[in-house]
Amino acid sequence: AIQLTQSPSSLSASVGDRVSITCRASQGISSALAWYQQKPGKAPKLLIYDASSLESGVPSRFSGSGSGTDFTLTISSLQPEDFASYYCQQFHSYPLTFGGGTKVDIK
Amino acid sequence: QVRLQQWGAGLLKPSETLSLTCGVYGGSFSAYSWTWIRQPPGKGLEWIGDINHSGSTNCNPSLKSRITMSLDTSKYQFSLKVTSVTAADAAVYYCARGRTGEYWGQGTLVTVS
Image (cartoon, rainbow over all chains, first blue to last red):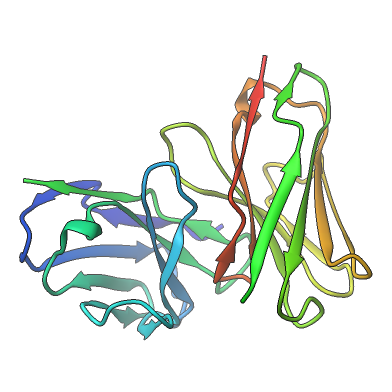
């Protein structure tokens, strides 16, 4: 199975900060990567698919980049509603796998 | 507007069978695969498996011997069964549309005790 390693596992940031989260795959997955946001007690919400495509309705401050084994989710200017956990997921090959998650909290 | 609504028993005893169903409201049913994901309390997401419109399934090898997925296209529903549950199966279980989860159910907390 393809392993996804997210870093950092947690970070503290302030409103307005630029935040980046990385996801590294154990083998090449082309651009078959998605990013999700999850708030406590809620289902995950799709933010980015195909590594860099913004899901409809998601604010443009979210962006994704990368291909192959290294990927990044960037929030250009952190907003209060962005404090949450973020997960990457590969859909290149079965079994599909998730990264361990990154919790973004308020500094 | 697409909505997924899931239901099933939330409290099980060890060795019992977990059974969940997800209903799809709005959108096409046959054009997508349908996915199950779980999340143990305080932990990350784990992909369980998916099923496509023809009933072909893909499963997490760690669960493959215990899980059954099925779908009822006439009712726009798909289902998950996990046999012989243990405390390790306690989690919030989610259904979702597609491999990239563009729509999710509300989640069902399954407790094993």
